[in-house]
Amino acid sequence: MATRRTPQPRTAPRTGPQQPAARTGRGRAPAAPLVASTPPPPLPIATIERLLGLAMGRGADFAEVYVERGATTSVLLDEGKIKSAAVGMSSGVGIRAIHGARVGYAWSDDLDDRTLDQTARTAAAVAASGGKEEPIRVSRISVPRYYHVIEPLADVAIARKVDLVERADATARAYDRRITQVQASWADHSKKVAVANTEGYYAEDEQDLCRIHVQVVAQGKDGERRTGSYGGGGRVGIGHFDNFRPEDVAREAARQAIATLGAVDAPAGPQTVVLAPGWSGILLHEAIGHGLEADFIRKGTSLYAGKLGEKVASDKVTVIDDGTMANARGSVNVDDEGVPAERKVLIENGILRGYMFDKHNARLMKQKSTGSGRRQSFKHYPLPRMTNTYLAPGDSTPDEIIRSVDRGLYCKHFGGGQVDISNGNFVFEVAEAYLIEKGKLTRPVKNATLIGVGPEALAGVSMVGCDPTPDPGIGTCGKDGQSVPVGVGLPTVRIDGLTVGGTKVGAGKVA
Image 1 (cartoon, rainbow, N blue to C red):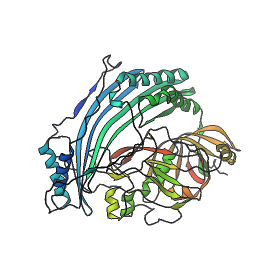
Image 2 (cartoon, one colour):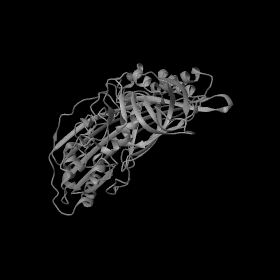
Image 3 (spheres, one colour):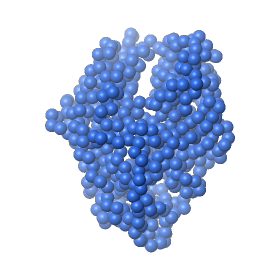
Image 4 (cartoon, one colour):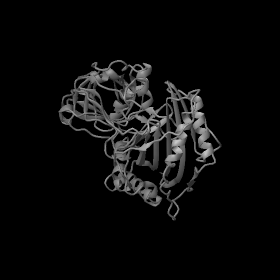
């Protein structure tokens, strides 16, 4: 599923301000405070205007300059000890020139004027052949604020972050004597970005992002081993973890592992499946969301291409992608093309209403960007991507939904999954699941997978809960070699006739 359109030529040797990460060895973090100071502002506007002119110098229709300066911190605790604690800084500029469907993209982490000029001319050369080099004037636009971190994460001493993972480790180990392994980690990223383009506007944003994650292994009788994992965060400051406490994160990870010891084989075959609220929204993201991104729609490689206004799901299904949710992991004040974030209704009561557009695909399709252009860093060009994708709530209570199932499967927590957006086929691993027998949750099951086709699964939605729940803030979406933070969410949902892959064939005939 290749979506790359152009090579990404590098320019001069990397002699710029990128600094290697400082790392500690095995054991506790150093006593001296270890911080990455808040990154300085991006390039002067005058420099950006000059680069835009150079990028247009070979006759491009559109050019854009993206500037990023950031700082990262990571901490890994394993086997009861701090295995690594690192801080790092990076900065760079990505320049894009577009001529029709041709895209030239070049980046540099050397911020010297001559190198940046060479980068802009490289992008121009890839995109087009003709034109004049003249500065492009831009004006600053007002940027909405859906998140604002008072104490930037880069300014927080690493000792406070180490304390969080140590508290998580101690709690998980004390939860149950059958917990034999614990790994806790912290990661944050503070960055300042600026985006300007030849449409004349210029936007700046400050983006802080962090998360804590805990994974445990429980060992039961006869050497049975089960795992549990949990975590969260978002575009929040360190104070978020006064309420979303590492102790609670650790207990949830440990609970998952202990609860699934002694699980029975998963029943295989078509059956009624109930999805738990929250992280189950990853199924929606993968099985439907990617198929609504504009690059796949423009190329006709998505099964949702050309189906606007058509019924593609049950009446009970309304799918929304919302980049404006306060402090959510997938939220953006402006996207990575400088377009303000939007709340987009993609499917409304089963009818397909819209797609997600970046500027490039929107121009080619004579549409308007929906603020969906996102990139991993200055080294990458933007792609149409999701932000926070969720299913709107219905009117059934979670208890009503479970009581309605005579025999089926309750999926509480998901692992990894795969989807083919050309036909909607998906496979997901269910990390924690329980049998539903006569309207009640009973035994835990193991080795379950969900297998299906996106539109068929959406058509099978028969009940939607009144308990909308966002995930705790830990999702990362991969596409075309780029990773970006995303959010998902779901109320409790009943899906009829969904195929469960398991090891107990014929045991799951149902409902």
